[in-house]
Image (cartoon, rainbow, N blue to C red; front, top):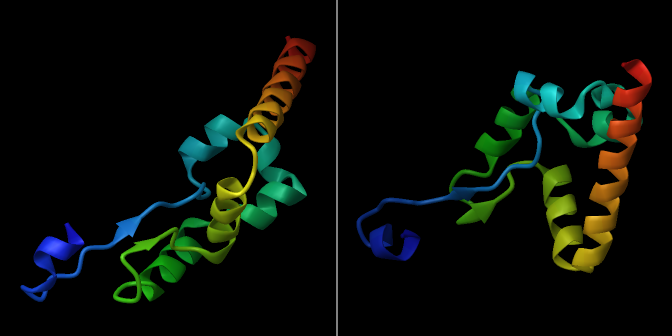
Length: 102
């Protein structure tokens, strides 16, 4: 799309963000948003928006936030099995916590 419209003075940018501190993300994290890792990687809406707006016109594809770019690149070069195991571990941890609170 960027190629098609570049000759008409229109810039197309693909924005692929990571998690941003919103009600939806809080619902998914279920209390984990206070962990040091979450606090480091998940920006608030204002911080993310400011960072993403700074990327306009500089690239056709961006995550909009440098910490999200770091995670994106790590995902590009990590074995999918490692990602699967990490997600399985986190899901199991959440399940145990839910059973404990029930």
